[in-house]
Structure formats: C-alpha cells, structure tokens
Image (tube, rainbow, N blue to C red; front, side, top):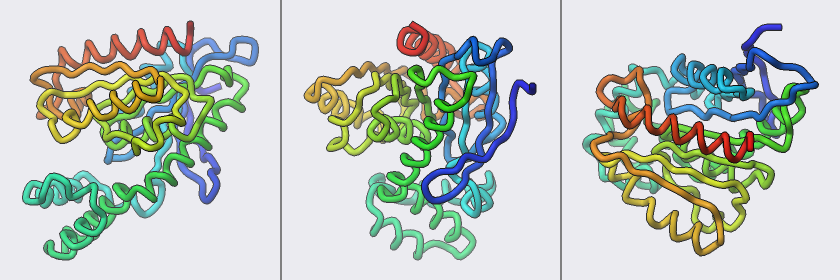
Length: 271
C-alpha cells in the first residue's frame, strides 16, 4: 500500500480534502498513534505535507486536512494573500478579532483586494472557526476508525491559523490526548474548562500580537486545572517554523521547537 495518499473526509456538513502519511511499518497488528497537522492560511501546502511526512517518519499516522477545501482555497493563493497582507499592514491590530470592523475595512479597500479580504474575514470569524473545529473533530474520528491507528492516542498540531484551530479542536474533542499550538491565537477562554488534552504552546518573541495573549491562556488553563506549558523564542518572528518562508524562518528556534514537540508527543501519545 502507498505510504501516503489523498482522501476525502466527510464532516457534518461537507467533505474536505485530507492528505495522509503513514509510517513504514503499519497494519492492524501494529496500531500507531496519530497526529492531525493543521495548516496555515495557505492551506495544505507542500510544507504542511512535508511536516506530515516528518511525523510519519517518527512512527505516527499523520493527517493534514484542508479546512479551506473548495472556493476558499481557490481564492487563498500566495498572490492574493500578499495583497491581503499589504492591506493588513495599514489596519488596526485588533481588526481580525472584530467581524464588524473587518467588514468595514474590507469594503474600504481597492476592488482587487476585496475577495481575498472577505475570505480572511470569514476564516477569522468565531462562528466559522467553531465549524472548522467540528470538521477537525470529524477528522480525528476518521483517524480513530483506521486499522493502522490506536484510537486512544490521537493528538494535533497546528501553525498560525492552524495553531488556533489545534487549540479549538481541544475544546470540542474530549478524547484528544495532546495539542500543540504554534503561534496561534487563543481559543475562546470560556471554552478552556472543556479541554481534556495536554497543551503545548510555542511562540515567537517578535510576534507580540499573538505572544502577548499567552499569559491570559495560561491563567485560564491553570484556573481550570488544565495542563499547559509554553515557550517563547527570543528573536523569532511569526511563522518561525516554516522553512519555506526565508523572511520568517528561524532555524535554531524551529529545531528546538521540533525537539520539544517530539518529546511532548512521545510522552503523551507514545508513552
């Protein structure tokens, strides 16, 4: 059987594309832990597929679902994302946390920027993200049904948008064992009491819009008796783990973060 394949996973309301990567040794007699790898705003890029394969090489069944399957992915091209980033450079810092402000800002932009900004507004909307979290829960259920997977040992990791969604998945999947958040926004703090997974957060010191919010998550997790550890990398920007983005990649931080993730999943998914 192939060591990786593309599949379609049915969620509650739609079907989403999903890339699967398997360890070399597999089969129903050797059930493995599994990891859901959740993408950045770019969707399931070659970088995300590569990360899934890295987990497979460590002995995990890895699934990289594309939450933007369909029209959203068509609009979220690198060129369109660059247009959006230029617009955000002129915008207030809290824009993406306020749907009304975001809609007004999008309407004020040149016509060529509006379609992709509308998509950004959609994927940032708390109601839409709640739906994405349920899509991800469908993926964890899909994994648990595979003969290669030990259903009691499933975790998640996500980057940027995907980091936020990894945390949100932990709020809706009581059977998730471990969740890693790479520089993602906090989940709704009122949902923290529903988290059963242990959570690891990895953040860049030069990413204040995200990193400055971590203490409030740590406080909420502690108050609810949840397991949360975090690490901030001095000198690292947002997306410091993505080795395909030269302007953001921070090699020493990325290497240390990968080691931390390896130990975290070893303890919580393999231990």
